[in-house]
Amino acid sequence: MITFENRVRYEYKMKTSRVDTLVRSIMTHRDPKSQEAKDASKFLDVLITEIDRFYEANSDLLSKKGKRPHPRSRLPENKQWNENVEKYYEKNSRKRPRK
Image 1 (cartoon, helix red, strand yellow):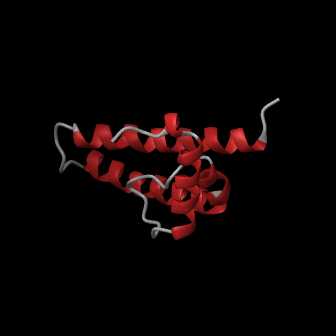
Image 2 (cartoon, rainbow, N blue to C red):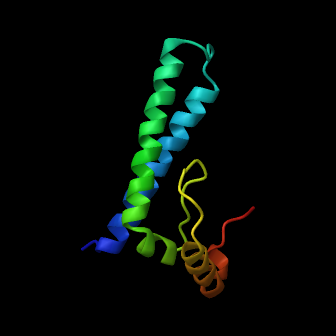
């Protein structure tokens, strides 16, 4: 049976991968000033807002498992989240992402 904690982490991973895919398609679009690209940018804003709300609602759980807000996130940096992430990587040094 899947735990709530794993479900939240999986959901966050899915949301961030959608944003990354959309960003990649916008950046490689052949006509960046077209209506299609502008609409995709608006949709990207909606997805980022959704990810921010999801992270705020589950921030304690996500930060304790080493997840930071998405790089495109508009959330202000939180000291508690950073401390939780660093504690996680001190305990699990092999899971630290490469720079």
